[in-house]
Image 1 (spheres, rainbow, N blue to C red):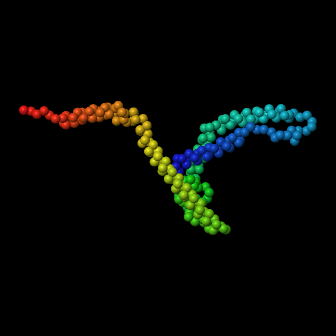
Image 2: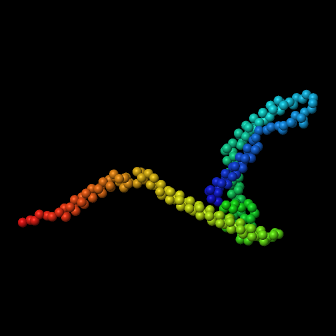
Image 3: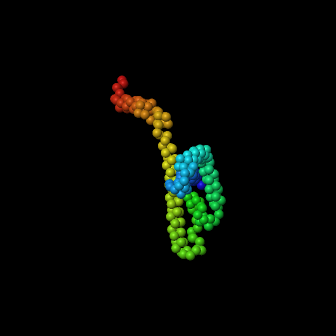
Amino acid sequence: MSSSSSQLTFEAKKGFVISQTRIISQALSVVPGWEDECCDEEPSEVTVAVIQNALAKVNRLCQRHHQIFYNAPAIDHVSQQLEVLYLQRIEKNYGQGGSDVLSGHADLSDPRNIEKLPEIWPAEEHGADEMSQAYKELVGQVSSMAAGLQSIRSRHERLLALRKKIGTLENPRESIQPNLVFKDSELALELKRMRILAAKLAYELEAPKPMQL
C-alpha cells in the first residue's frame, strides 16, 4: 500500500477513535422529569440539589479520566494499532484468490486488488444475469478510475520533478554564476569591450594606408 493510502487509513482510524471517545466523554445528565417517576410525595433525602451535586462530582471524575486515558498520544497509539491490524489483514488477503477480493474487506483503492477482480461475477445466486452485468459495469468504472488515478499520480510526480529543476532558477544570484546572469556582469562588460575592439580593428583594416616610397 502506498504511503498516501496508509496515511489515509491512519487518519480514518484516528477519526473513528476520536468520535467514539467524544461520545463516551460527554457529561452525564438526568432525564427531565425524573423526580416525578422516582420520588414519592413524602419528603425524601434524594433532592434535586443532591442529584446535581452527585452528577457534578461524577462528571469531574469522568473528565479527569478522559484527560488521562484519552489524550492525543493515547489516541494516536490506538489508531496506529488499528492501522497495523488493518494493513496485516490487507496483506493477508493480497495474493489469494479473486473471491477474497469480493468479500467486502479488500481495499479497492489499492491497484493490486483492482487487478485481481474477476471479470465475471460468480453465478451462484438468483438473478445472476442482472448482477453479473452490473458487476461488469462497476469493474469497468473502478478500473477506469484506477487508471486515471495512476495517470494523475504519474503526472504529479513529473511536475514535482520539473518543479525541483525549475527551483534552481528562483534565486539566480545564488544558484547561477553572477557573471552569466546580470546586465552589468563581468561577462557582459567583457563582451562590450570585445565589440569596441572589433569595431576599431574593422576600421583600421578598411582605412587606406599611406603609400611608402
